[in-house]
Length: 106
Length: 432
Ligand SMILES: Cc1cc2nc3c(=O)[nH]c(=O)nc-3n(C[C@H](O)[C@H](O)[C@H](O)COP(=O)(O)OP(=O)(O)OC[C@H]3O[C@@H](n4cnc5c(N)ncnc54)[C@H](O)[C@@H]3O)c2cc1C
Ligand code: FES
Image: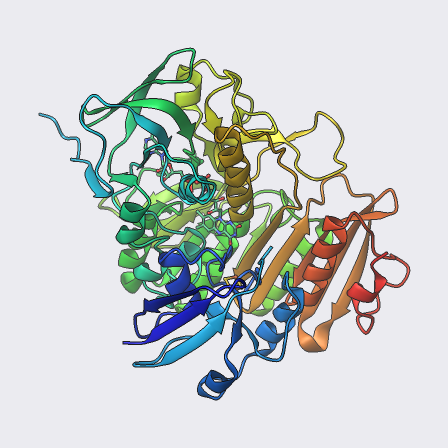
């Protein structure tokens, strides 16, 4: 079972056991992690599902597409090198991921 | 015999029989769900009952015409929240129950009655009842195979019919029609779109964007007929669709006729409560209806235009996820006794084939446009101006343009029209 650790801007961490194949965004939203808004429900249209991925976990992710890259320029909190849109990260079996959520998404 | 379905419950236990729920939310979709969630985020402590007539856990609609129709996402991905979420937040979720009448008192409390016969006493009421598809009026419209696309059952029905279908006629060249047409074409169907007006998506975009989609969809193989009117839907002999006849006498084969000709707001309960109705249930800037107590949010609400600087007194009804969410947040403040006026830049998206449209702002009342094209990259943006200032943009495959305009509008700034046409110049650098 994949596991995602969400740390909010104030440093509090919520750990959620996810379903293989779900996105990090779905995992967060369905379980009430409010720091991820995801207005468009994963359609890559809103940039309100921004997360910072722990440097050590970055190599385990598929590289991002051009659209995601462009969308990341429109996040509410400025992007960093480890920024991703969490609706575009699909979880593999037994993957363990650490992400930090920005202070605001809108 | 009583044919009503038995409502099913999930989430937190309801209050004991006879005890009023704090807030009864009728309509468990984008607006109703957001209202419940926002209230809990604000610290609302009363019990909440979130009730809807659909037999599904509350889900998101946008994918119904796009990824879900094409089997790119499963039904689980559309669900808003786990059952645990509702339990933990003291929200009772009732599915499969339709409210047929409400009686309210002057203090805003009252009793709602469901078609199952159950009554639901409440202290406060919220109507998030949305809208329903406008029905096609043509001979044959009642045939099996004539479908609409508003809810999950509609999408499931469409998916059930799809395997045995080779030809589809889509009536209506608006967002839903074009999205579904693109999805069905991607599923290997021959699709004809009939648009009775003079251009595509006439209600929501300007002529340049309409032209762009017409050209691009035709290039991708959709047969689009502008100005085409249906005279009759043809019966293949056993009460199912066999095709359509147009007013010009031509006939098209079809096993599915998908109708997307707009929606009608569900104002009936509002009317029964004596609320003011005018293209939706009329609300003030705090999402309160004319009785001063009933909360009304989302597709069903007719509200003051939320765009900062909009002409005073201008009213609007919006049909979008963004509006449902932002409007619900304002309503949650109202219920908490705080008055926050709804203000924001509306935005919208629509995915059609490989074209990703994002709209920022409202283009109604524009005086001029500036077009940015980057055909090599498949990018196309129309910027709308009024009084020399930007008011909206339609951006296709151009998220940077979309976000620059959204940012400019949110900051009350404009974008220099003289330089905006050059696709090599970043719009963001022109915000002033
Ligand atoms: C196929 C499709 C694709 C879309 N795509 C997009 C998109 O890409 N982007 C975007 O921004 N928007 C999109 N939308 C629009 C968006 O989904 C709506 O604006 C949004 O769902 C409105 O939410 P609502 O809760 O106000 O109303 P609704 O979603 O209509 O929900 C109202 C609910 O109330 C229930 N109800 C009504 N009357 C009663 C009653 N008397 N008793 C009990 N229950 C009742 C209804 O059955 C329904 O479940 C799309 C809509 C559809 C249908
Ligand atoms: S949920 Fe909208 S871009 Fe990720």
